[in-house]
Image (tube, rainbow, N blue to C red; front, side, top):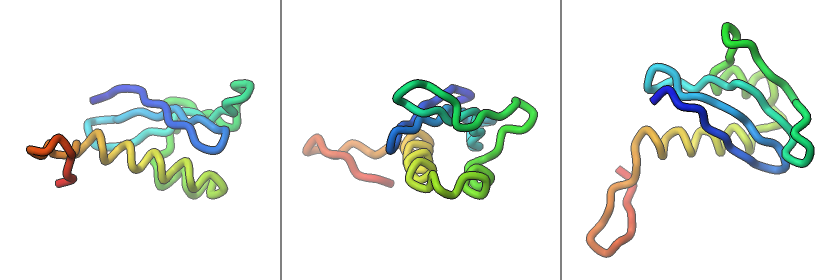
Length: 88
């Protein structure tokens, strides 16, 4: 589960990775309109989600979306008999 993910909210896109199956590493944040960088980090200094929230608190909605995607990937919803999904 060491894969790269992308999440977009309010005109910004974050590139983030799952690290060691259960950690989030924030790689970069870019503007979606022109791909200009907001911030990027070197591999030895990738912040986790809590660190990113501290560094860029104005992007709280983006960090919330990353958290939701993280948990959806880590613990996927359970299928129900009626075709809907239930969260464990």
